[in-house]
Length: 59
Image (tube, one colour):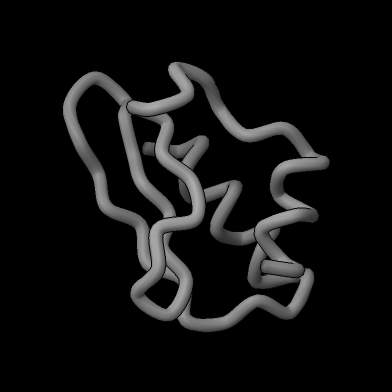
């Protein structure tokens, strides 16, 4: 889950609060912000790009 933690840290550095990581199997994880699912590695099959992290901040 080190990559998920880096994503969380990047979001926090951009001012996003209320972030929760939900770990899954084989490196899968979901990112929720204030209880709303914002990104699922299971659904996408990959880690979020920097642009996706920026979009998470604004949504």
